[in-house]
Image (cartoon, rainbow, N blue to C red; front, side, top):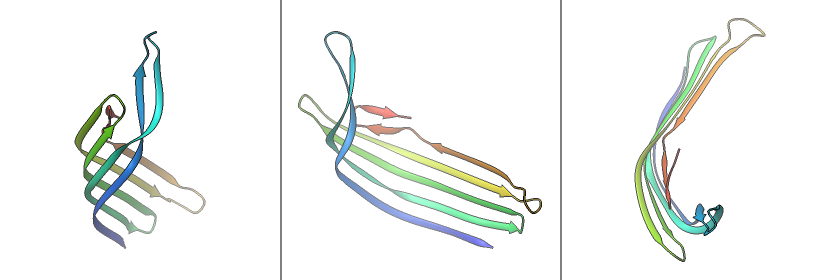
Length: 119
């Protein structure tokens, strides 16, 4: 028993907040958050929640997407694109009443920002 789903999406965020790093003349790096970018994402997400037998349940999802960031500040503008992916897995086994073994894991691929990449 369970379900499997596939979803396609497009997402646009205007005036997105972006973390900006600036190197001052005295060598100190200042990290600020500014409202200067626009993000576009489109992709497909596949999910499954399955119970192959009564004591075992597994939920997993895979998200594959194209990510595009446009940023502009007083001194510079930038445009970055990347292809990314996210994975999620949660498995639960209940061998008897009152006990449970659970394993969870996730992976988020690096993402582009207005000034580079995170992850």
